[in-house]
Amino acid sequence: MEELGGPRLYGCFRCRNHVSRHDDIVSKDFQSGNNRAFLFSHAMNIVEGPKEDRNLITGLHTVADVFCSDCGELLGWKYERAYEESQKYKEGKIILEKFKIIKDNW
Image (cartoon, rainbow, N blue to C red; front, top):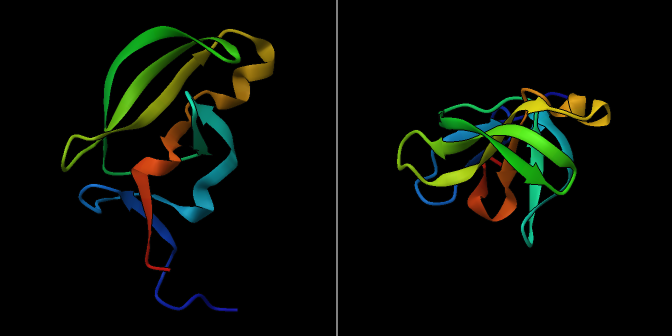
C-alpha cells in the first residue's frame, strides 16, 4: 500500500523543525530520567554538543547532547560509545525524549 503524503515525521515540539522519521525508530522502550524516550537510527536537523562520559541506567557511555538546529531546544542525546558489550548496538543512535517531539504529517 502506498503511503499518502510522504513519510510520517517527528518534529521539535517547540518549532516543528523535522528531526526524524517514524521509520527510523529502533525502540520505544527507553527512559530519560522520568520520561519516555525513543531510540532512533537516524535524526536530521540536529546539532550535537560536546562528547562526554555519562553513567546511564545501562552503564557508562560516551554521549553527546542533541539540539534542534532551528531553535536550539535540547531534544535528547546521541550514543557515541558504549563500554559494555551488551550495549554496543546503541552506538551511533539517537535518543529523542518523547515529550520533546511531536508527530507531523500523520
